[in-house]
Amino acid sequence: MILTEFEYVRPVGLDEALALLAGQPGARVLAGGQSLLPGLRTGEERAALLVDVRRLEELRGIEQPADGTDGTDGIRIGALTTLAELATHPLLLAQAPEIAAAARANGDPQVRNLGTAGGNLAAGGRATDLPVAAIAAGATVELAGPGGRTTVTAEELAASGVPAGTLVTALLVPAAGRAAAFTKTADRATRYPVCATAVRITPDGPRIAVTGATARPLRLRGVEDRLRGGPYTTDAVLAAFRAEPRELFVPGRGTSAEYLGHLAGVLTARALARAAQAPA
Image 1 (cartoon, rainbow, N blue to C red):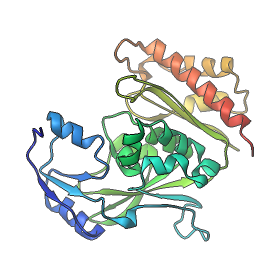
Image 2: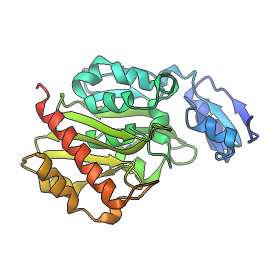
Image 3: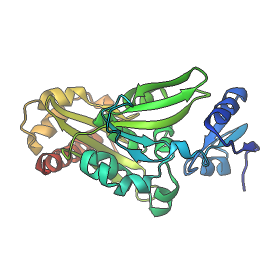
Image 4: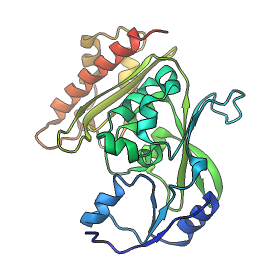
């Protein structure tokens, strides 16, 4: 039973979808529907209009433009690409393994077969897996809206959300080889992360992001600075996390800030060990 009344439209092109979103206050985008539809059933979510974008083939696919014409020098992931596709795509496994691993950790097979990259990135208010991996990867998100197309960093999107009347069209991920990893402790009932961490080792040092244990997906620059130059031993990583403010970690059901800070450190240490041992 759906507790919320709404109108439903399935546009045939991106311009039509954007016009619908701009023209109706309270319009929501329907892609995979793995977060939105359950919320509509329970009344936790509201929508005056559902704009079903699943027919927009231009928003699908994973590619690495040979000439860098997209400006990313990396991998372009269409917003309607499913999590199942991300989890197994050879290009991501070789050049952005934290993205593939985050998709692979998301929900169950049904969720991954229907859920999309764009929907996972836009799921404000829920701790999902893909945003933290995108932040660690230094990815940007392409948005389309009334003013045309623009890009924001994955970190900025996690902080501010998708603006009203705007649609996520692509995730743009720098290619960096296999020195990256994602780890997660999941809630057994929902499969949402109690804590998930993603790392990418770069020439300038590690990039580290955490979600679930924090109010939103965050890049931990203080931890990165403390670990710059190594070593990435468990003791060193845990010491770097102990120096973080405890209020950074938000207690949940049966957890404390101290526990979540320690868990985040343990998961990050595992991810850094995996990334450091990855073949070049």
